[in-house]
Amino acid sequence: MKKYLKYAILFLFGFFGGLAGSLVVSLFQTNSSQVAGTNSSSEKVTVSNVNYDNETSVTEAVSTVQDAVVSVIGYEQNSGTIDSLFGSQNSSGDLTVSSEGSGVIYKKEGDYAYLVTNTHVIAGAQQIDIQLSSGEKVEGELVGSDTYSDIAVIKIDASKVTTVAEFADSDTIKVGETAIAIGSPLGAVYANSVTQGIVSSLSRTVTTQSEDGQIISINAIQTDTAINPGNSGGPLINIQGQVIGITSSKITFVDASSNVSVEGMGFAIPSNDAIAIINQLEESGKVIRPALGVQMIDLAQLSSSQLQTAGLEDSDLTSGVLIISTQAGLPADGKLERYDVITAIDGETIETTSDLQSALYKHSIGDSIEVTYYRDGQEKTVTIELTHSTDELSSE
Image (cartoon, rainbow, N blue to C red):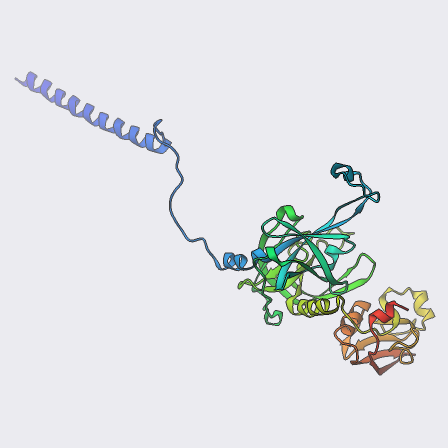
């Protein structure tokens, strides 16, 4: 009896042990299948149908103005042979793309729509095409341009224009607020590209040189919004989709000789400044500015021998604008003399010719300015009435 009981106990242990082992193996196989992600041949990968609202204040701002943003394409004469492809008999050569930039339509009036861009985008162009947000190209007609402010106005047929932009009051801009750039970086192939950043600073003085060698000094909004060649002339907008500035330039190097790379420093012409120029360009095709009537140079650029010639070798002055000559009949004639050094206008410090231009061009014909200058080591002041324009200056 004990013998049979012993066999029975062994049998039960074996039965339950095998059952437990089977359960463990089955459990591991199930988990292994889940971890490995084994799919049967009937299962397919699908896209989730979860719906969500991706609309943000930025996307709303962009949608408000995006259709008013255009690509501006300038053409110049080229002696190439592309004429033959189109059967052209133009012996002087075909028109080829010379420059590309951006612009923004700000007004529809009658049969025309008006857009603003940068002067350097269309400088020298013999023909201007405007590529609308739809991709369609229309011919543009230059209304007027101003080298000093880098603002140009172009008009186009209004029949294809569906949206115009609204200008914001740039005097209300605050550092740190959202800034969004829309334009055509690297040309029309990337039209209506959007980048976002903030307003980094206000009232920056940015000095560049025009193609004809003229020194240009503009008041600008600084932004870290990504700006690239081709963005020039496009709008910088706020979170309401209003234009706060016209994108103008980007600093890429602080010092080319040291190859110090700089990113996040773009500039835009404030909307209030742009509007003032736009109104003059629409009215007369040009901007009339007062002329002082002097030939001048930065004091800091003079060599020691030149300083000695000017009688300034022992002067404590290290900056200012040296008068080389005055032009007869113009405002400075009889007021300023050769080798005078201008150090302030209306109390605003003048260190360079760009500073002088900025201070002078804030005024209109008929205004008077107070000029602080040094002559023979003595500080003096004189009031000069601005009776002539730069047009008269350039014609002499």
